[in-house]
Image (tube, rainbow, N blue to C red):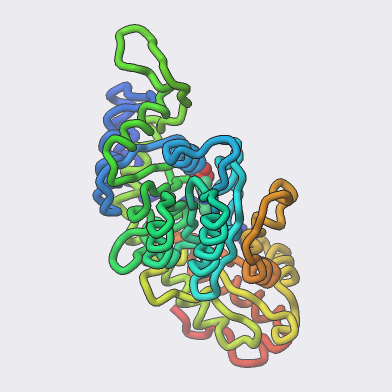
Length: 389
Ligand SMILES: *Cc1c(COP(=O)(O)O)cnc(C)c1O
């Protein structure tokens, strides 16, 4: 019998979603907007400790509106983490602005505050500051917010937080995403909770969120007819999807615990292998371990990350390389980059293991077995996973 395919980060429904969705159907709110959207926004804001929230059709849409509301336009520069998913960056280009990529630090794999300062300082000297900074909280871990906020404040540049991967994480007791001018979350199918596609923007600024809500609803002015003074988008979340989100939100804590447990067990089962290093947990908060990521030194390990990925794939197990840095993407080859060596190295050696909150012990043990066998030293070292629960 062929074992089931093991996915990197599949949706994990709780069963609670169906009641909310049934209610949306029973009340005929099968619409964009509706009571579940309003409730989802309130419950989400409360869950992360944000003042105001607007539910949107995707995290990408949320980043687009956040940049627009920060005043980003043609010819502007926006500083952004290079080690990220392309959705952090494309909205900068939608607006005709130029991304300037900033390298990661080793402590968190997120934007290096010292390099951010260097980039802002050199631009201030030239008398042309970027319009915004976009930081990304990668793989479930907050960037060093205090340091980054301080640098942005010194130069008066607004900070947008891409927390799409970091719902449930903490930074000195606060939720990443609630510290900048705006924070952005995603409910794509692979994220820690999902609506099957959706996003959220949060902010302490009531009028900014109200403006985002208007822009996301075709920018209709208050009038009985259809009146428009500015250009809007169709970016609102549907009531049915918000219903799913409400059910998911109720189990967020359990989802974080399950992902952290995956990480702890992987670290225990693979941590002795030479050349294996797990993504560090920075001292400032809780890493959700949305994805368990590690780097492999091929000389010490006896195989490289791609060999391991292919060995897993041959067993029906989905693993992925670490994000390919944006400054290495053909799409953004023209854009400036500050540093880049850390992100290059993490991409060259990094691997993301199956990390879903529904991952079974048996499936995780399959993953561990393949990784250990692929290592030159692997299986012989110690008996693999006996008596593990
Ligand atoms: C998933 C993701 C996004 C985009 O979210 P969507 O809801 O898929 O549009 C943006 N940034 C990062 C870092 C992501 O991982």
